[in-house]
Image 1: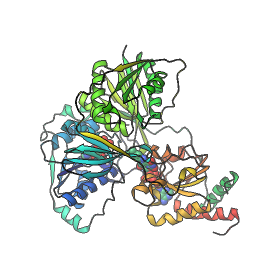
Image 2: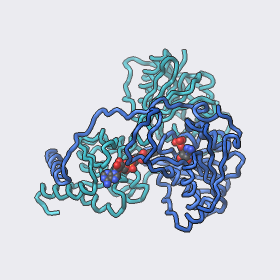
Image 3: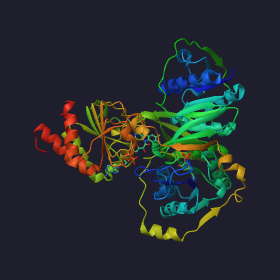
Image 4: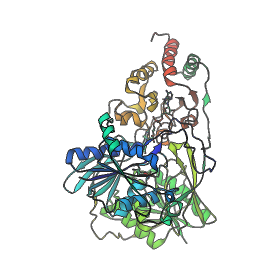
Length: 262
Length: 328
Ligand SMILES: Cc1cc2nc3c(=O)[nH]c(=O)nc-3n(C[C@H](O)[C@H](O)[C@H](O)COP(=O)(O)OP(=O)(O)OC[C@H]3O[C@@H](n4cnc5c(N)ncnc54)[C@H](O)[C@@H]3O)c2cc1C
Ligand SMILES: Nc1ncnc2c1ncn2[C@@H]1O[C@H](COP(=O)(O)O)[C@@H](O)[C@H]1O
């Protein structure tokens, strides 16, 4: 089984303070820590497990600048055999659709049985790249996958539905699956893995290598164009309880008591 | 007259709420753009739904086929592509749900129509289509303009628009012959997989201590467990806690977990992503403890504490026992 995994290098923002930059169209990236997109971490692990069970190769691919190489190195350290980075100045402003176009051109002549992507990217959250890429490649896809069982020419996959429900679907291979968190437990990287990964070459492709023009990518080649970012308006704000931890705890306890809950 | 399509989402014998939310927003958009609202209904033996939908839309287009019995994006895409090509709706809306996420991007690609996903607002201004959506787990909103097109597709975030039944709507119901002449070969629905029967029913608890990624390590679970015990409640959690296997899946609150409405929900180290919030925002009293003053959870909580949870939680446990006149 040859598996291609699409990975994105994204900023970790859950605990960071976010500031909109002067262009108004992007956030200030300085000071943010970047890592592999959470969903892609699970996708990569699933790819490596498929390789371990059935043999074959794992290729990690990203559309991103040089900084994204740390995410590719992480993939190599965790068991990917090769890594590809597609980069170009014209890519800036690409939405999920334009990104899928770029990935399509980079992947279409490669051999694969399965392509894995994350269900969504934690930064833009489009949840489109996987299915768009599948449609461009002319292969079936299934999204939000919680389980993959491979058979002869087919895969049985569990798709997550709402409220804890799943559906089991059979999909013909080659196919693309978008992976949901919790499908597996991503492994830690071994020191040996890291050492080996440092030595591996990362293949870099540009706009011309993949046969696209500037109009196909960036804002020009996108479905949607960001006009402005803004901090979500707060309709309601919690009443903040201040003081030392002990004072705060005492106040909360009083509030809970006033409600008759203790 | 041109139309706005709303794709009906239904599963296991029920029309899903997001359908009525979209029909409500769709009606507003139809008025704004001088178009008609059309509910699109695909399925098998679904005519009874058509009656309900006709109370919300100018028209219900029904396509029945055994191949449409359960959602299958391959089959749905073929039928919808036909309808969109023939009727050229200004906009086709579907839920940003498991179904919409599977269907919309490949449909849009196949038809070469622009798609905007997970929209929390949609407007047409001077014949330009604008959407509002979120980035960075809900910390930032984006207003975006959609590439000019004759027809658009959008997926709409569930529970964003308040469903409202119009006063006098009695849409016509039109049956359309299924275009699915060939077999659906690439994807086959096998079965629904129900969650394993759980041990603890978090929907029945009066007090829930909801823990999130902020607790950092599995070894901190006992501390949280003790707080829950002091309050006579049980532990619930956000998704990452389940994904890491720290608690069984029946403890998950949110769109892919359970919807809870306890008398008290204490959110500890939970950022407040909408998928979590949808599962707990109707709790009677919500208290959030988070070290990030900008965490979205604070817009849903009644009381907030901006501090390190590891300092607050042990103290809180003590104070609760003090009030109860018991020793911890
Ligand atoms: C299709 C889909 C379905 C989903 N369904 C669900 C669902 O049902 N339920 C759900 O919960 N999520 C769901 N999610 C995931 C959701 O989008 C969020 O990723 C998730 O809710 C985040 O969990 P969290 O708040 O625990 O973690 P994070 O977002 O990482 O937040 C951790 C918080 O802890 C705080 N923190 C860290 N350390 C401390 C400390 N020492 N003291 C105090 N605070 C601290 C941080 O400031 C941060 O706000 C779903 C996602 C998708 C795509
Ligand atoms: N720049 C990128 N490079 C490689 N893969 C990407 C990129 N952007 C998105 N993807 C893949 O597509 C998935 C969904 O992203 P999105 O559609 O942007 O939410 C991600 O989880 C990745 O697997």
